[in-house]
Length: 80
Image 1: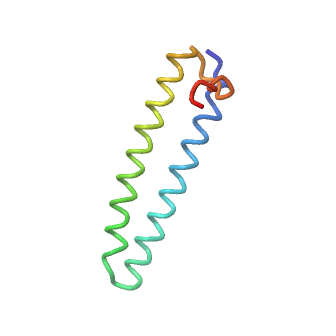
Image 2: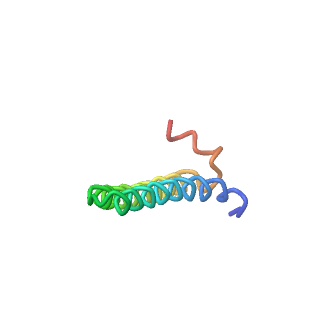
Image 3: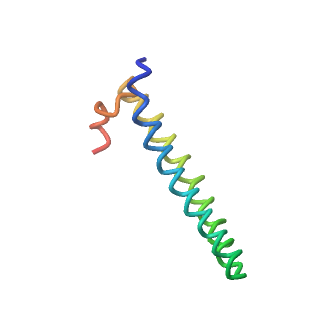
């Protein structure tokens, strides 16, 4: 197993998580600024989507690793 091969996959998942967290911060800040709770409700939905995204992404990585025996994203042509 090559550690350099899994790095791009981790960075993709990490990038999506950072974008979802940034959206959550914006919604909470707007909710506090304008005294509306809708922004905090959106944050709960964003957290649910983020948790789902992580579980689906991990399942895809485990499936692809079992099929190919590699973490290399270039070897994942079986998911097409």
